[in-house]
Image (cartoon, rainbow, N blue to C red; front, side, top):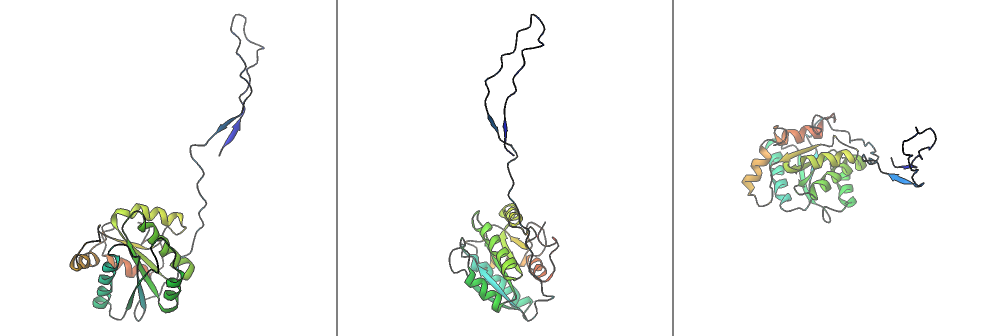
Length: 220
């Protein structure tokens, strides 16, 4: 909080004999700034309700259009085809760049899908954007959503999710980088463990899409 302070004048009366009198400073106004600053107001948001299972459901895989993000999502689709064949997946790309909101795509997912996985956040700009898009789908369109990021941006993602009002927003991480990797290398990412939590990536994703959020799948 900033306060206006007026310096007090030192009275000349009552000073012992022989002691120099304090010179009263000229009246002036000082602006004192708080070093703590003023934190922004955070409006708590509500995550979307989860289905008990993904069996027979359609999961949208949303490409944020950052370099090679779609290649990782292709491996996510392969994982579902192999391990959960009853789940239908559909890969879509954002209508524009990841910096822009995409109501057209969100409405398609809300109308035709049951859950979404969006990624990949693997730069200082796209990781916050992917987090924001995932929270938009969760809180404004009611679609259970998991964001995929590379592990170098876990703290950035946590901060953005907190400031957006959904600190428990589901996310899972794969190693950095994604761009330039072969299909086999990206498959190893998807079938491997989250570098942040040590848990299987797709196990985290499926649980986060089907389990009520209590911080177990996101808050770290």
